[in-house]
Amino acid sequence: MTDLVLRRTSRLRVGARQENEMDAKELVGKLRWLGHDSFRLDGPPVIYFDPCELKGQLPKGDLVLVSHEHHDHCSPDDVKR
Image 1 (cartoon, rainbow, N blue to C red):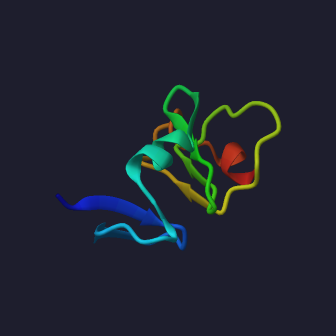
Image 2: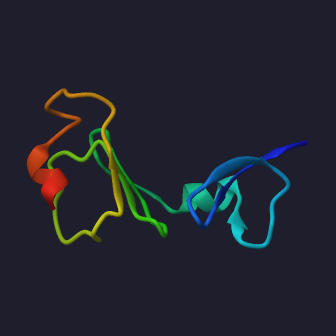
């Protein structure tokens, strides 16, 4: 069976897991729901998905991904944070 792994250097690849890589279970453990359709992956790197109406003190993001331009998926004010 082939594993899907995310390298700690942020590269996605298919193949055998190496020492500096995390498996899917570890990856899911670092995923945080922030409300509605917003998520954060606590890396490194820290990645935000569809940031909107974020609350509280949050870690600075290394990458922000926006799925589409609807107001509840893409908030310029939240991206600036």
